[in-house]
Length: 452
Ligand code: 9MR
Image 1 (cartoon, rainbow, N blue to C red):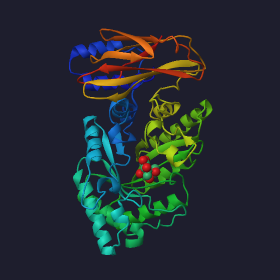
Image 2 (cartoon, helix red, strand yellow; image 1 turned 90 degrees about the vertical axis):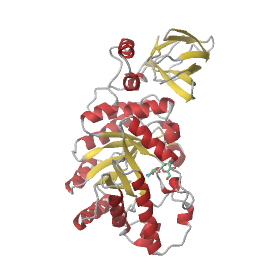
Image 3 (cartoon, rainbow, N blue to C red; image 1 turned 180 degrees about the horizontal axis):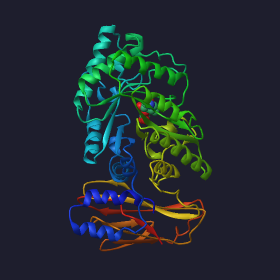
Image 4 (cartoon, rainbow, N blue to C red; image 1 turned 90 degrees about the horizontal axis):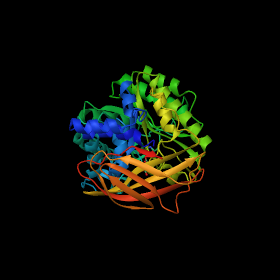
């Protein structure tokens, strides 16, 4: 039932083509239905709530949530050098363009990520032998081309990514080794020339609290400001561990703000040892809330971007075996307590999903030009069911053609599905799913589902 949150906004934005549609909607939406989406809460506070996204996934439920809940997108990989110029002189802008177009269609900002980094570079670049003059030219040309391509369309760029070691010394990279620490000033200057309206950032991890690394970043930003090098902000990535939000986070944000730069939380996720338990998810909610609150408390903190909004699109399980559940939505697109933590920090009144309840979560698992496949998951925690019925009302003329693992009937826009003989029982802590195919045209907004 909590899937309904994003659907009302989406319907209102996509279906406001006639009064009839609006009326039908308002009747269909239960009075208590939706807390405002995160982006409305963030807008009211003048803050960013963003997510990293994968371009190819921006359809179905993933696209619905990305568009409805966030006011900013960061391409997770699509703008990295290795993605855009895999072979020297051969460019692939498809995914980057797709994300920027999607953001503009949904009234969202884009954060460009990232121009100068030691990782995810094309092999022709990393395997080459370059003089410093050539390296400098390559870097400047890359920045001019990529920043220039999106000139005027991006709110910010992570110009330089991860320049420091943990002890605050410079990381020995292609750039540092070839050009010295001045590569940073050069990159910022080139980015400013290519798009004077984008805010230019240096972005790093483990710089959330006051420590040797964040102090090195602080000293760098201070000296760049003193030298008149264009620097507008610092990105604190915030790849955090459950229960370990640095206590000096707000103080650290404030000290950067006091230097006269903006601060953004750019890659927030909070990982835990799997399996996720109720207690761990509750701690994660507290942690998410603390991070976003620290940002809200400092006016120069522009907001927070999560590094993937769903556990099905997170880098954590691949990189930290046995860990995961780091994002605000689970793999089935159900909002977790962490979602409520973010909402609360942004001034919302959302309370965590009640314990001792069964919920139905509707998602679109694939979609093509005229049809789609959907799935509903019925999950219980602290309660159980021996039979179930799930109801929803389609808002855009969608028509079910076939269902499996449930019996579904559609009358007009109203759909009602009951369990098959073998899957009526949903034990405490368990879940069942059923699927269906349906037709759509024009738009395919998510309906509000109720479990009866
Ligand atoms: O999310 C990105 C993941 O898909 C890539 O495999 C990974 C490769 O390093 O990069 C991830 O994003 C990184 C970001 O660009 C910079 N900060 C650390 C992020 C996690 O590795």
